[in-house]
Image (cartoon, rainbow, N blue to C red; front, side):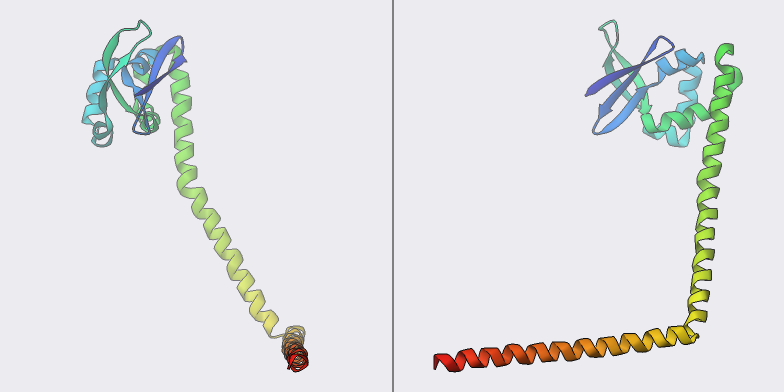
Amino acid sequence: MNTQTLTVNEKEIFIFTDNGEKYVAIKPICEVIGVDYSSQLKKLKEDVILSSTMVLNTMVGQDEKSRKMQSIPFRYVFGWLFKIDPRNVKPEIQEGVIKYQKECYDVLFDSFTKRTSILREKTNYQIEIDKLEEEWKQTEQYQKIQQLKSKQKDATKRLNAMDKNVVSEQLDMFNSDNS
């Protein structure tokens, strides 16, 4: 098991990799933001999603002692932090937690609405393009282009047939010289 640390507000946060998944120790995060570890652990265990992701792993701390630590996948930490009541964190970081949670709301909104509006915009452009192409197909210019393309295709076929005949004649001459 590969263990890394991240220092936040002079507190070490443990991150370890197990089977390609990064996990984060819960207790150090609670200590950094000033929430009660035991109440957060209880909330995590009651959470339908987060409880199913929790693991208990032995990790070596800064003091070189091994200890068992409850951890969750790193990718779920942000959702957990989003759910923490800012009134329960250290007063000096309340503003930062509130700012973080507002950003989470914005990210969720953007994720669910901007993509939809861009897809709708793209669809409207395609409808307009299709409409213009249909109108263009009715014009004399479009008809003339189609006629010229048809004549060009016919000329290409004639050239290919002529080239094939030239090659055949050359081969026939070569074969008759050797006989």
